[in-house]
Image 1 (tube, rainbow, N blue to C red):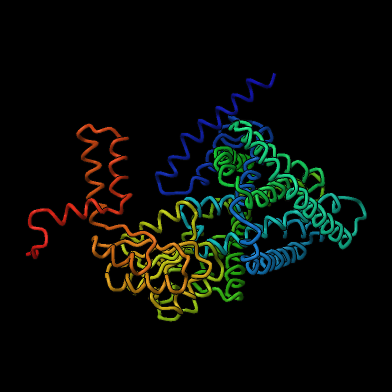
Image 2 (image 1 turned 180 degrees about the horizontal axis):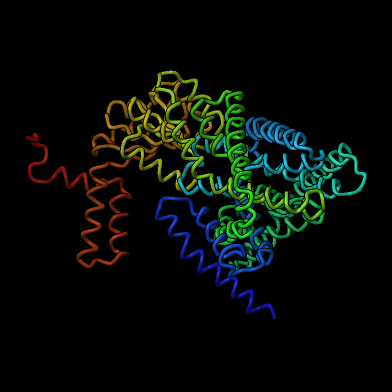
Length: 575
């Protein structure tokens, strides 16, 4: 009976997404904002094409679950330990201070402590889905402000566990607030510890068996089972399903199946996350917003301003640079998707009355819609506060101290910038060094991990975390400086892979003698690329082109070098 109706709703969602989201992208806006607008348009308070938002909320919640699973996959326990200062320090302080300040305002307005706890906790959380989506779209997860923002968001996602566990206790008659908090904390610790223990024993053997079967569809089915099963087990203990998915992803991140799992889950995450944002747009009660416009606007400005100032101030307290603090504060100033979950649950349990709950939901949705504007403001303020490049290595040392398995790029000209973009597109962290003051200033203003430094100096290499680096890329224009950088890197890190760009074959041989792992002669490689395009144009098959190109590269361009030495005029002085 419900099949055709549900199919009709799915078609409405898909049509709205296909028509509206590309329009927002065309105007250089976030796709998340496009999904929100699409949800408002088809919802019961606008065109009314979908009357019941609750019919899609389950699928929408799955979007957040898959997002948290993917975030867990991208982490590891070791990386989490490396980020602990910002996750469990800055993140914990931000949630606690924000919740207390907002809760104090709620109490001063005559509301009971239980309501203040829910409202303060709900508005202290920011939008993991919205912010991460924006950072990923722009390739800025690897920047310092991107990593700090992610660390704070990660603790917020962890904090939802005791907050959700509190709801049934707060809604019970004659409940003790202190006792409720204690019970929620104990339950959260026990459930999370049990999940980690069981997951370590089960997940790797399970995937080993499925991988041996060599059935791709079965591998995908097991991944879906792990994600949804972990979420369901958490829900049985009144814990956030999203946290269960995050823990499953975190445990899988340490296995050899991580990359295949991530590739399999990506289509589900993207589609369901878009549905989640459309569902948020649908629940915005436009008539209520119209009646309470002034109240909501005042609350919206207060929330955005207060959280921006508070988070930026806490960043400074943790000795982060002013430009990073001014970027992180506005970016995390909105309410979040878990605020919807917490406040919606409080309305169902009777802790919040319906009208107050609807106003809070509208406030969170409006604050999320304002995120692109707040991020733009933070970017402008950050550029004004960006420090001038100096020869000091303290800032570089602070930056590198937060990451591992990164790539060091020496030289940030056109080649170095291209390499950096490729790394960022794949989520590989990097630290770039350059000796051009103006270039470094521009890169810092754009939030890039670019520092003034000489890659041939031992103190600069140590500050850049050479001992924890995964590889180094040398793209310096000047042959002598490139050779010095290769020699210094090889002396300090004998096992580190070093990839170098050279001008010609003679320079390439010198770099190999200095210790380069692989050298790409720029002029020769460009000639090969032109030759490959030419062969394709005259009808040579792709397989033959690939074979020929590989033959020239396999012997390190020796055949090309021999041809150039025997060519007419070779060895003559160029005019």
